[in-house]
Length: 112
Length: 115
Image (cartoon, rainbow over all chains, first blue to last red; front, top):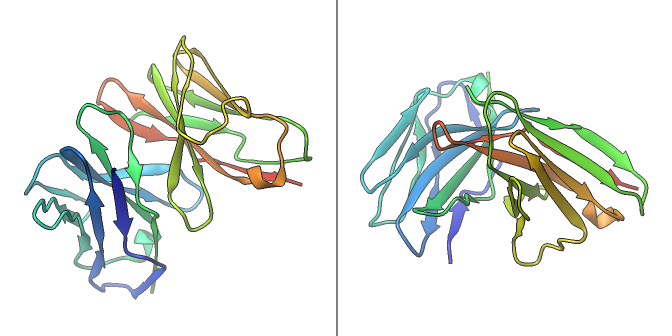
């Protein structure tokens, strides 16, 4: 089946630290991969995506590279800010399907 | 950008009563909407796919008679939790597919507490 496994949180870092949130997936087809972010009191927002192997998605200083050989889509940011505190969800969608399959979410807290 | 409004954000109801949650696409027409349930420290689990003008498609293990979904217009889908029980307490989130971008926009969620 299709599934997404995320690094278990919560993750707490100091401002300007380097961030990595691991995400691996299993899929029966050729998935598109996504990172969503949920700020406190808000709905999920698309952070970045990649639709094929070796693609790199990037937005707001965050990056993730679609690695087919390791079935991974790890989220990275070189220098986090307090405003990055949120819950991050990795997700996949199989081509031709409409359903998003989510990981369990990783709560990130950045301290000043 | 695309906006989805979900209402109410929080609701407390007595056991045995029914609760309706609304999901509206404000600036686009959504032929397809999705309803998710999120347990504490767990992922979003897709409950059903709501299709405008037709019956919803439920995921395996979701009771369609308990979680009634209606998608009567291109901008509104509703989820009614019937005869709610404490185990139905959860965070419910809707999502709509924006045909202009093929992207998915999420509502801010509804925290349901059944007492």
